[in-house]
Image (tube, helix red, strand yellow):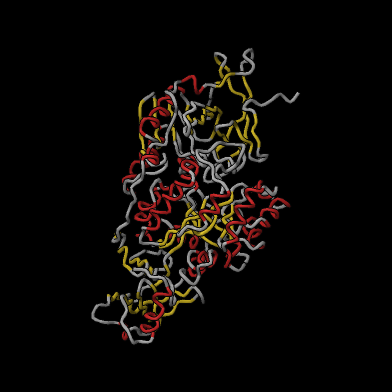
Length: 598
């Protein structure tokens, strides 16, 4: 069991001196030292109280009758992997389910921002996520969400977060800092609430997460950095990443289920030869299917290596770099005395088969099998009854009236989906007018945002392209970053109504309908975002959604993620919210109908 270092200090000294016995000893491994970026052969490790006591050539004096001994057999011993920025809710799992899914892949530390549930349940949702995180056999640090709503005036969230609540949470155990500051225009403009939240975090010496989703590296960028954000994961190019690091920010390069931003930025290290200390690997968003079938941070690490990165540098970016970024380099991130005993044994530093995982001194996974218990909390009724539509919806709720009924066409704004990226494109199209209503056509579908927090019955309609849907279908989701109302996309208004009503009845999730009939559903009864079922079960249901989307004509990679981000009003260019269509390049609401230029 992990003890605070100050309680274990004397025992660690005795063991390192060879005067006392360790709880665990690993013998005969190759020590991947992330401080010196070297591999040291024939090394032993002694562990006590969940912490490393000794790393050196001979731990034999540390072995007693009750010491557990693991023969590394010449395998590499590297620090447990750290995800520096992510959202547990994106896995459609609670913290316990997420931990159970990623532990076999070698993840032993997570820094997570629960701003998804914060938008639904406010501070109470954050507390629940923190509570379950603290129960896990790995280190799960919670960042206090900074922006709920993410863009005030452009959306309505279920429960707003105030600067007073941010200051309050900074005193909680397990809160590591402030979650991503998505309201970058507010910070750059000197918004008092945003600056107060950052100041409250910095006042207690904690880290401020960043989110600057703009290509503008001029004065707004410099103002944002001056506001106190310590990192950014929204970079998508080498130049953007370098700009952050030059200003003293951590460049968090993400490989999630739908974000492929490592390859375009890692050239700053592999080709330009920049110092890698401020470059950090993360996932941001990983679906349960990705976790079960492809991996977690080990997947990111392999990808970075495949992109030409030295394996030892890549390992630094997933261990000591994030630990240092959060001020925890004396606590975790390396295999050195005093640190938490988070260790992976692997036979290959390129392919990275995760053979043994040790977290806080305990063997928690072996050859892909989870060996540890991941306790759950009892989620309250408030969390399980969060979808409030207020009424049954029908087809006319998803219709767009033409402004000029005498015309046969109408020019409207269209959200253009970009595969494998968070940004969308702001498009326009001339669509046919039938029975005084604007009709979807070709690749352009209907999109609607249904209010689901207060039961107002409100529906905002628009159009979206890029999914390739065919037939009379619809997909609905109560996962709708970041306000988490309900997003419905479809070619048929009857199916859109059926899909929306179905999610209202089951308490949230994602569902696909065709010809008015259900094709697939993943139920997410906790805040309409998460399931408390095991990851493999959730992944199987989620895969059913993917197959149903493909059956309806969608061939995009990880199209579910593209769908759930359509309401993310802090990433350009065009989005939908409960207040209307949002031009994120200008941070303002715009008419769905494009005005005449004459």
